[in-house]
Image (cartoon, rainbow, N blue to C red; front, side):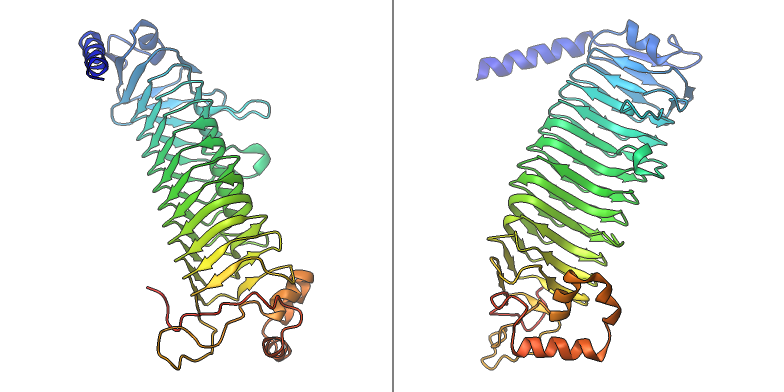
Length: 410
């Protein structure tokens, strides 16, 4: 092990000893980025000074550090992909990339990384990007501290801000993404972390991932998107300390779970979404210590969902707390706070002595006939719900919280 460490230090020291800095500006030895890349050696640093550079597509096929001073503008002129990276160990930092070309046959991006590992994209500004940062079949990359803004109007003519395909061990940290089709899109991406990002104002999803396993999504803000997050055909996912906020529309939700297994949804806040969590064929999901506040439906859990635990959550000010399309329940609801619970606690242990049934008859009716929502605030509906609570006939008899909390959980 010592020999390997010494060899690594020796190689790194040799690279640093022979690397050089190349400066790019109108009055510098190199007047274009392409020229500096062509004449550079592996692991050199290219300093791009302030200015506007229109150089078409810039391809990088060797390890390099390209650093901008005062955010030099690299303009794709609404025609070109700007950077295409085909080498390991490349860093792009401090650049402003604008006006990526739009294509209906190619996924043009401000930065396109192809079959390359250890590529770092840090502290850049991307504006009017079709696709922003696009990784393909790459590993151990970092996307950190970037601001990525698109001008998406229709899904068909827009791309994603951050798009990863067939990648692993990736880090997506502290980025701001908005006005794209999807804010962050992952497909076949394993063992990766998405942390402290803000994704808002995107046409479809703030975060969209499919066929991606062993990933962590922590402390992100998903706000005012067509829908917050869609998790599909994935397993072993941790979603913790995220804010799902104001994802509002006729078919919108904070979090969509479809064919997902063995996940943890912990300490998140779902605020003012049409549906907080929508579950379809979701299995062995632990939903605990979350706040569901002022959503249309807090939970919409279909009959295909099994072996899930809904434990120690707060349900406050939602139009409907829970709804389902099935007369049977295969999930556990326990120790939650429900603001509409009217039971009592004679032994003063903090838990209600009477079980709470969170599925109202009217929410069950709406799943069958959406147009009945017009009756929502009527006296007839209040009577209907009360009668069903007294003698459950249509709602799942086993869907109940046997130990509801008397006070909100801190």
